[in-house]
Image (cartoon, rainbow, N blue to C red; front, side):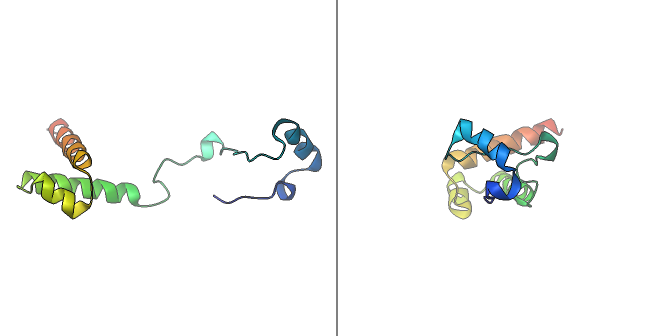
Length: 95
């Protein structure tokens, strides 16, 4: 997200009205609901995390210890345990 000078996009009268409420402060104007994107929609990160989590679970099922997974994936013990728990639940629901 980048900043845009208000003078470049809004008429002077509207700027003066806004200044009555928030003179000299930064404000965030959210996107319209229909234009919003879900987290990770613009990148491939969602798929990368799903793939990583499946890999962690499969390695765990095949005997890799939690401690080894912590080192390999640079995640905390809680994160590894959470991923294993979530992937196990998904696997059970798929049956």
